[in-house]
Amino acid sequence: MSPIIKGVAEIVINVRDLSGMQQFYEHVLGFRFHSQYPDTEPTIVFLTISAIDSPLGYGGHPQLFALIDVKRDPHTKTTYADIDNRRSALNHLAFEIDPSALLPEKQRLEELGLSVEIHDFPHMQAKGLFFHDPENNMP
Image (cartoon, rainbow, N blue to C red):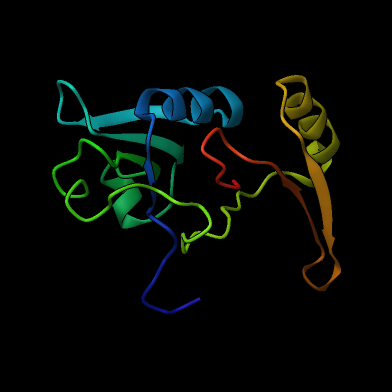
């Protein structure tokens, strides 16, 4: 890691259905609501992934997953006509879990109706669970 960069502060994706995507990430991945912007009729929702052990984290800024309503947010609605997953630069999102939780988490996700695949990455001594969110992103 860069000696200057301490970690990831935010992951931000554009979404079509802000409320539905918020519910998915809260319910399926357990992210917690952090804040929204603006306070009324939000176009951006911030969800906490986890606390971070850094000056930013000590100031109250955890690792965040932000969802931006691409159709209503004033900063994006003029630059994005719509979201096309076939042309997005986003390949996937990856979050670390305890290795012992891999199979129970796969089962839990499948019980929620998701199609889940396990992939092995021996060069990194890791395994991953792959599935799609309601807007076809791969967290």
